[in-house]
Length: 474
Image (cartoon, helix red, strand yellow):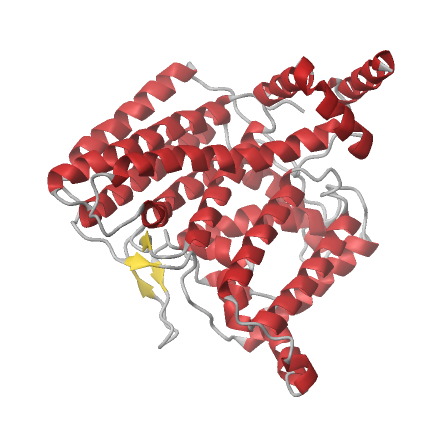
């Protein structure tokens, strides 16, 4: 029996680790470092430490608080909302009836390159655009308003904010698993099915919990894009619906009494890091090491029996444990800082208050990790947009467009990566330092409060640059 299991385990390992055809989000390119890694790491840490030493001279003492991940800005532009919904329907049809090649269908390029990556870039500049383009809010509002005429439907309404927050965290985890781990995530018909299922979930959430509560607390794209939008230069105004300019990063405020928002930020930050680790030789070797530990073999035997493929299982465990590891280090940092903070703040408050300071790290790593991917793989969408159903059309005159892989070079690519990561981490350190000065007992204690958090962020800087420097393994 043992020999038989070892045979299946070995065959599964061969399936896992012998090179085979695989699909990824379009085209992945990671440039080799033009200088040794230690030069980048030492110089980056040096810059951040120098900034940390001198930043308290320039920062303001106080920082406002805000209890939500996303800023509350909804613009009920019916025309744009309806157009977006029609485009959503078009993507569903294209994904189902179009070419099923992963790189030959508009739905694949649009979702993974233009939307998830590209629109995040736009949101970092300003998070005010997604509420205008949201394809579900306006059309579903019409239908829900009609259904609310019936008392039977109204009985299903719920007002629990805890429930809707928990659902939002679950949806985020499920989407990240689908986007990073699920083997069939780039099959166009699967993506069409995903759009249908997510649209149904969004509709039911709006119907049961109310439109505003759902989009502020559970709709993951609204939460994620508005979270990144706090970095941006446009400040939403609910009363006038007119955006005002502000300095970059000033929209990031300290959290206030919402643990779910802190968890959301931690998961968002860690998932991008795990997406980078997933492609590295380190993760390849780590899985090989884990699967051969004698004490774990009985567990893998059970997992192999139920799932038949340990690769997906190990990657799924990775995407679960990565947020837990990051949360553990963040928790230890906050616990160390807690003793120097005003006594009316408990540890739970500290975890919430400092969590928005991690937003620049999430944005920086998103930009750095996907920069070349967006510029190169994003070009695949131009001919597909001209001929979405592969019928020989040329709607925008780009059906003959060919991808230019030389649009950026290694020097420029790594310069963007390095600058982005350093700026993001410096911003996080300065924001967390401002928070420390606001809630600490004294100025001297503010420095002691901030030290463990700054150390945590410096270590995460090194970790992020190391991931980005590792070559991709398919």
